[in-house]
View (cartoon, rainbow, N blue to C red):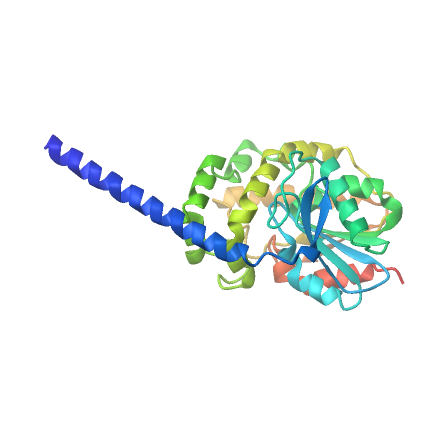
Length: 324
């Protein structure tokens, strides 16, 4: 009996090793293919010996600057940027360690502010700027805003993270949004499991599984994971730094808040969902205190990904802030 168990275990172990090897090879081939689609070198600037990728489109008297959320890359703004570039200069970019941009040893608001300033200067983006941030993109540009108030014509925050979000959340709510351990995610990423997972399941249900955004995450998650984990490891520090910047002065600020008509994606139960929405709604309103010229707009049809579900609403609010 024991010999049979040992033999069965050996067969299982060998089979597992073979499957892992196949997965690893599959992932390497996939990465080789998608790495071949790297943007042209003209879409990169060098900052402190690091390459930062950007996408600049359009011409106009001011520049609309897009700041993505945690782990988000420049393509998050794909259709919004294309539409607005008909009348404005627009620029989106990959933060350090995300997609095509090289990583940075330092993750801080200082690093983000310096990177963004140099990207805008080295790409000759005309002032003033209209800064548009989504999700954690309401945290990362705060120091840049603080130091460049005279060059910013307006700000649009799209369902952004509030610096006190963790502070106001219960332990139950915090645990519900914690991702698996980094070593688990890295291992699954290396052997192709995450690629297979996102082939059968959408990254976000905000749009259909076959939507370009879900496909993009599936194809390039391997180029996003490390940067996303670095941001996650430093999120509380970044939020603490952001909390010290409590006023944008008189810069016009539009806060676009999701109404979540279909519930909160990822909420494990109704209690967690209600906790999240209660805190979220209060903190979204509190963001209005950042500027003496602020207003709140509700995205009635959207969850967190307003950028994908109601892009025209975002474009309209951005255009209202453009200098006349």
